Image (cartoon, rainbow, N blue to C red; front, top):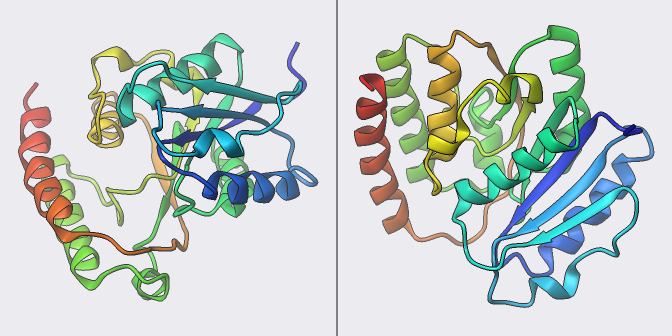
Length: 235
């Protein structure tokens, strides 16, 4: 039997030293919140492996032999959570943009509310996003694309692009995640599947931290996002 019902999994790709920072935060949080850790690296080509934790009974590690894509790596972690019979799982990105300190808030929220997923929203308090150095073009893009999403699916999310999720594993088991995108549309397509099955997703306010980014990726992301949600609406 597992001692802990909560799994925190870190999806990494070329994360390098940031992985060490995240693990240090997690160890501090474990002093007041009980959970296991899974680190899953998606065939990085930098020195991420240098910062991998020492394996013990409460830290699991995985290195993909080939790159599965962001969504593919998340799927592998969720399958691990299902196999090991965790009740809930939190996803943390290896770039340290989403702060691990919100794990307790996410977990308490899902236990108290008995919902299917909890996400961290940067846009409940947009001023905090700017304080975390979110580029203004990305702030405007996020607000605009979230508005389009809400209109299309009759929802009222404040941030439809967050990467901080806590999943109810019992709910995930009932969803065919195999058919969800293996790349960066995974989170969005999972959200849509939950909505279509009338599952409940709630948000909590979070702060995030940004570094230097190129806008070209986000322009392409916006185009693909709009095309994908239109497609997903009618499939």
